[in-house]
Image (tube, rainbow over all chains, first blue to last red; front, side, top):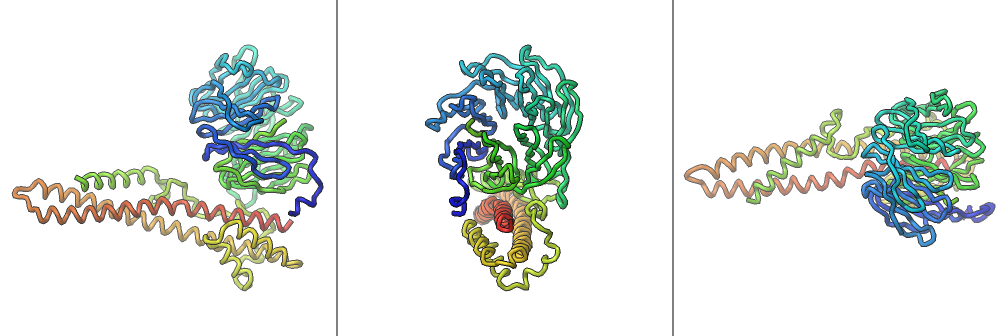
Length: 312
Length: 202
């Protein structure tokens, strides 16, 4: 009721949220901030991303060993992609032509041609590959492996590992700065975010977290979102139930925002006005006003929301 | 025949419980991890509660509301609405009232949670004793059935007793699985209400 009198949002976007336990994807309208549809998908949906043209949503359904393709127009599953066993997360190149999939169970990254929807290769990586990201120039793929605690640097042309960088325990997610000068890697157990210089391929700094009254092991960094101007990072801290707002230049936390229980991944609306977070245990999505750095809304979704993607 | 089957199942069930347990909490019967207490910082990012911590009970309005909001029979959305209404009507006392209300909810729901968890552990201990008895009596029955001459009346009596005990065991087992969800749902409630209170304070 109060919202109706507030300034009208510039554009409405559509967000898709994967619900790991209820085997569904929730569709959220960012104008009304309501769930407009719940799509039944395969088992254990986690990694989720729009295709670059905004026409399809890909969702990794780990227990079905595939990636399903949802048509954004009809909002229904129309196809599947040939990943390896237990796909969890994936990354696509800037052109949206090649998809790299981390398969948690067989220590490989599967390479898929998105136009042909066909598997074109595999890359052997460390134990339990997890986080995936591609450098803005498309030349380097970063894959983190949960058990070996490494960020693997993979040359996308030769599909060979060219460097391994040791980070803190259980690396979960990797994110490039838009100017390519740094890669940020979150470590769930280590409780830190390692900052890697991608040229030197070494750790040059760390973001650490401290919340009075909370035990260290309750602070588990996972998802990372960075604004396009590379000034501010938003880092999800799992069972600390908070998002850390980090000044990228000084690598210091400037604010903690209480969102929902076990906050996991984040996504910006394309205009960067809002950041959405998935809160696994409270079964909801929080909406953060990016400029004000305030939580403005909570939306109930399915059980164990994991990933979130927003139409470009 | 049926007795054999049930007794075997009881032993199997008791075994699963033992394997899933956290060594720190041998009596904890749930697959959900036992978190003995909710820490304040995990659910509250508002102003410190130090000055109001014990005072919420002295405020009749707040303590009545705490009781209502903590009750599982009050649907969560209705509880959230009540929080908003109460704070909207608080005017200048809003911050104090918000702190009092949350302090009350934190104490009450944490206590409720401990009670449920203690109950679960008590039942779990009883179940272990029951499993031991059933195992013991199953062996006795086996001996009676193998004896010559066979005392049919005794076999019959012991069989019936075993069926009965096994049934109680199974029923309790089902109830435990259901009750295991309760601490989590209390966590949900505390977090959700705390979040509304903090939003209303801003």
